[in-house]
Length: 111
Image 1 (cartoon, rainbow, N blue to C red):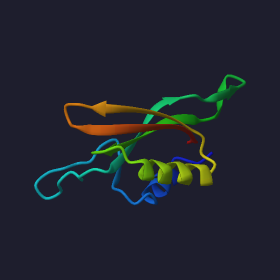
Image 2 (image 1 turned 90 degrees about the vertical axis):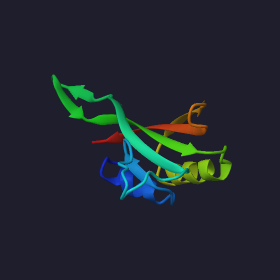
Image 3 (image 1 turned 60 degrees about the vertical axis):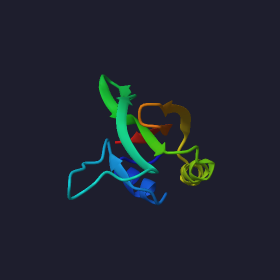
């Protein structure tokens, strides 16, 4: 299991723009074109003992946005997660209003 500190560095290895939660965009810094990734905390699933939190375990969602189904990019992400022993579940949807595909990778990390 990786740590929160390691997650951004790991995701940057994919080679597409990555940000926590969202990209800040304005005239001087436009939003990236797809493909790009964001990651954010979903929930916690802490382990407890003696009425205390023993290990802080956070569930994070990695969201990958593409303008077409990109099997090569998905394989690159999955290979990276596999190589770093990061267990993941996936889900996918198409955002009609933005004409984008969104692939989710749900992982757990240590805080």
